[in-house]
Image (cartoon, rainbow, N blue to C red; front, side, top):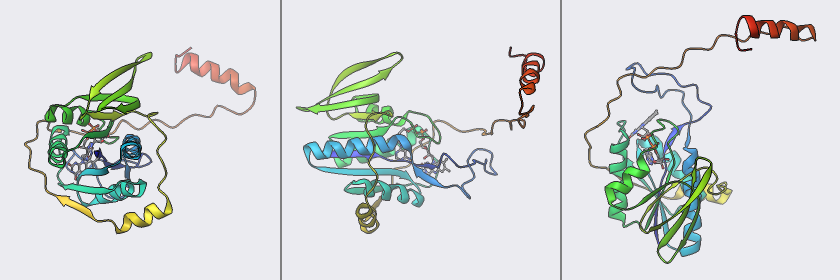
Amino acid sequence: MKIVVFVNHVPDTETKVKIGADGVSIEPTGVNYMLSPYDEFAVEEALKTKQKFGGEVAAVSLGGDANKETLRKALAMGCDKAVLLKDASVRDSFGVAKGLADFAKEYGADIIFAGKQSIDYDSAQVGGLVGELLGIPSVSVVVKLDIADGVATAEREIEGGHVIVHVKLPAVIIAQKGLNEPRYPSLKGIMDAKRKPIEEKIPAPVEPRVITTAMYLPPAKSAGKIVGTDAAAAVELVRLLHEEAKVI
Ligand SMILES: Cc1cc2nc3c(=O)[nH]c(=O)nc-3n(C[C@H](O)[C@H](O)[C@H](O)COP(=O)(O)OP(=O)(O)OC[C@H]3O[C@@H](n4cnc5c(N)ncnc54)[C@H](O)[C@@H]3O)c2cc1C
């Protein structure tokens, strides 16, 4: 089976994000990066699918050279092949999806895995767009997956319950937290990943459809107030919550 998994290189959740001088992008200096957490579920499911059916897992990332670090993490987890679709400009979701879909088509993917959302821009669009661009089904927020006889049975999380759907492969499976327990890369996996080549391709340019016009951080929170540490402080706390915060 030819299995493709999309992996994005995103700022670490611990990063204190700063807006760049242009006012429409994130200042990259001092930012630590990681494999987008939902993509870890996608990689794990791709590897489990290979364990069951055999074949090859290709991890693909669209971005600049820095994305190689994330591709190496995917290789260390067990992916067979890593491909960088090299474009250091910041594409919108459609531009990213087009590059990834073109690759999946050329590669002849039997199944594609993506994360629910990329935890930098949070658009939650790329997986669905890839399905549409390739004319194949996509199933979002998947928390359980079974594949048999070319049909994927996916359990989706919906408000207050779950729904089960069937889709014929090829299809895009969009991972939600809980789909599996992502494995940690082994030491051997990490060492092997350092030696494996990362293939580079230049994706076709795409006219942006969404233009970012401004980016700003939420206003800084005012410092907290400690009203005391003894029992008497409780009385003062209730007074402040009632008279100042007006929440009780
Ligand atoms: C500091 C910074 C630098 C950036 N540099 C670049 C850059 O060099 N080039 C560029 O094109 N964009 C760049 N971006 C954009 C960034 O990678 C976005 O995450 C991307 O445009 C998709 O965001 P989204 O919210 O639309 O994805 P969503 O729709 O939320 O993503 C859903 C899923 O699609 C897949 N996916 C999304 N984006 C990618 C990707 N780029 N590669 C592989 N799989 C993906 C993942 O499986 C992800 O879980 C940068 C962003 C930041 C914050």
